[in-house]
Each structure stands twice: as structure tokens, then as C-alpha cells.
Image (cartoon, rainbow, N blue to C red; front, side):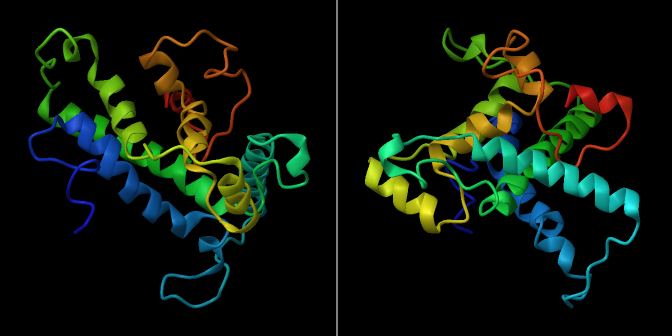
Length: 212
């Protein structure tokens, strides 16, 4: 029940904000069933890996390697903290897969709802009317990760022991893998938030998937 309130959810907020906030949290937790740990357990909670087809295993391993490599490249601390000045992509892969897969699941759910109910009205006021609801969706996601600034020692401790990436990097590292984010905010191709090469987490072979 603690997440049925701001900054995750408010019944007075636009649907876009709620799906970006609470929706992405729900998607995150569901995606844990399909991360590097979740794929080791079957539907009744028994330790029994269920991936058996070579094509599926190879695709999953490519996906997780991309995520590991991406987050290995996030180095928030000076070299004096080495070797723990960079995020440990292997240690954090489960949470990073869940962040990426959860956001995608929430965005797809939001779009499915809008297709059924019709588009939301633009918000009133000079400030809020400048944002589209796709932009508000991603702002809702970013809003849940607003936390006090951590000092270097705290970040270093988190890198050493925490399976989560530091909060301030979870949003940019995730949304740069989403063409829908780049379209919503008109990010130039090959800019920091729209790299030519990005990771696709639980994206199938459907050609239409390049828009999400």
C-alpha cells in the first residue's frame, strides 16, 4: 500500500504520470521473473531453469551482456576509488534488466489503454501544457527516483554491496534504451540520450518494436 501515493500514484494525476510512476514499479517487479535470477525458477517456485531452446538462451545472453556492458561503463567516481569507481554491471544486472523491462511493460500498457479510451487532454497552465503525455509518462518514471544527492563515500559503498545501480543513474541509463523516449523529447540521433547502439530488453523480433 505504501506505493499507492505520491510520488508513485495519485488518483488526481494524469494516467500518463501514474503509469510512468507506479506502472513502471509494477513492471519492474514482474520483470524480475525474467531476469538473470528469475529464469532459473519455474512457475511453482522450484529451482528449474525453463529456457531450453538454444535460440532463446542465446538471445537472452546477448541481452544481458549488453546490459552488463552498458552499466559497467557508468563510472561516477574518480579513479582513486578504483576498482569500485564504476558500477558493477554483473552485480546489478538483475535490477537493471527489471528497470528496462519494467519501463517498457508500463509504456506498452499505457499505450494499450490510450488506444482503448482515447488520448488524454493536454494539461492546463503555461507550465504543464508544454508537455505531451508521452513526456509526462517518462517524467513520472524519473520522479520516483528523485533522491538526495549522495556523497562519493556513499556511492562507493553502494557500488560495492548493492545489487541496484545508484539512483541518479537508473533513469538516464534506462531511458536511453527507449526510442519512444527519444521521440518524445526529440533527442538528436547519436546524442548522449539517443545513442546509435543501445540495449533492447525483452524486445522481440517484431519490426515495430523499434519504436519502443
